[in-house]
Image (cartoon, rainbow, N blue to C red; front, side):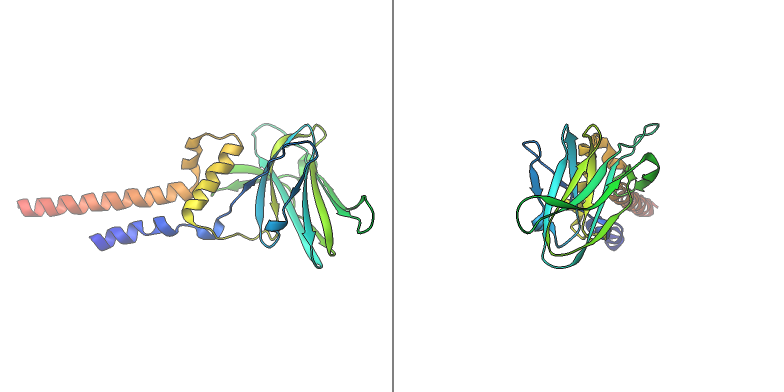
Amino acid sequence: MKYLLFLLLAPLAFAFPAEAFSPIVTEVSVPYQIVSIDEYADSRHDFLGELKDYPIMYEISVDEEADLQVQISQRFVSEAEPIPFSLIVVRKNDRGGGVKEVVRQKLSSEDWAVEKNSMLGMDFWQGPVLSESVQAGTYRIEISTPKNEGRYMLSFGSLDSVDIGFFDSLSSIRTTQKFFGHSFFRMFVSSYVYWPLGIAVLGFLAYRLWFYRKLFTHVD
């Protein structure tokens, strides 16, 4: 019976690592502060941010020709229109000051697709991936809206999944849910929670069934 319990409960320690992600909350202390993301350039990362009367701008340096990929998402709210976020990528001039626009993405209501994220237990409006081939240089990604208000999640880099530990994933899930205004009880909607809980309950019921069968056998 101990082996049966192990087989039922073992997935708790290894559940779903392939879909894990680790979001980073963007902290801006002054208007128009540049947020450097150079340390995250080698892999996919998700940045949570909130516009408060002014745009937010991320900066990254590219050492060689590469594909710059970004995607913006926001919390889905039933019977409401998505916030009209815009993305602008500019390149800093190598000599002198100033920047040059590389690509712009201005999203209308029809451009957003609803995505059900079972890992986070949330629904999102998700914009299309903005992908652009860029040369070596320093680039800035500006996020704005007409009113410069609203919360978003910016996915940067290769849009493939990143592997991290199960319990780190739980922390990241709660961070994201809380950022978008969900209470702690939202955790129970996440597949990272309800699947392991279901397995644990099945294991407990199997154990109790075995225990009572053994008890009744001895009584007979």
